Image (cartoon, rainbow, N blue to C red):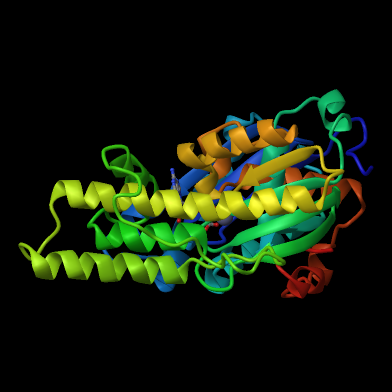
Length: 359
Ligand code: KG4
Ligand code: ZN
């Protein structure tokens, strides 16, 4: 197993993959600071992330966020061993801002750069603040379910840095589908968390949806666009039949039923994956949707039934986009010698371009 050596590296990490400007300082897997400057209010009025506005906001904020992360960690930049930065996947013009900043800092302070895959970061958010003993006790292979606004993936983690993509969404991501239905219900953007709040007041199953890809039992892929379209059709039909708009109860019922079908699809595929890998002892959940309490609850029951250990990020700030997870993945890669000198850094990391997650 590749573990950070004693005297774990001190990493300054940057993530500008979408609409959060985040910088963190970690020592190995210990999070010393994790500063997140959210752009939610900028994009909310447009109902989604506007790439140019995201880039501009990253450019305006990045230096202050770097300084805040160093200050909060009480760490002078000279002490840092390497700069880790998200290379992808993500919004290209947003990623570029972080990569440019990482290069500039690396050159100015003569530090190596570590290029990190954002999805590997989401997975490794699960080991934040674990002790060396706890990390050594992890039983590989681990199964990972990554659910965010851009991705829905099942991965087999053979070891740190060794991943096999088992399945992914063929259309929308789980978070993206929740956001679209939330928008339909007038809940703003991003609406996953608001949809899940409203769902508490509704009746699950009041609106019926069929489980996606039910007949395809031999693959571990996902599909959310069919149920999303069904939610739109339902809303239009109710609005037409009645008063032109949905009542609070109708909205809450749709929220509860939609959340339920999304979670049922995720659980069904997770159960299939666990059955396919009987040697697996651990299941890790990651990505923004991992904050969802219904998903967590049902995964807990599944893990209990299958007698495997379930982990999810310990704090909400480690579920959504953040640089601490990039620092943890960066620290692993640094310990494996996977660094670049700032002058040799390619515009895109070829390893990271092969697939969303490296094998
Ligand atoms: O990982 P993330 O912060 O960004 C991406 O890499 O995409 O994930 C954001 C997604 C959004 O779609 C958001 O609505 C969703 O995570 N999300 C939730 C919850 N909190 C955030 N979805 C369902 N329930 C939640 N509690
Ligand atoms: Zn993410």
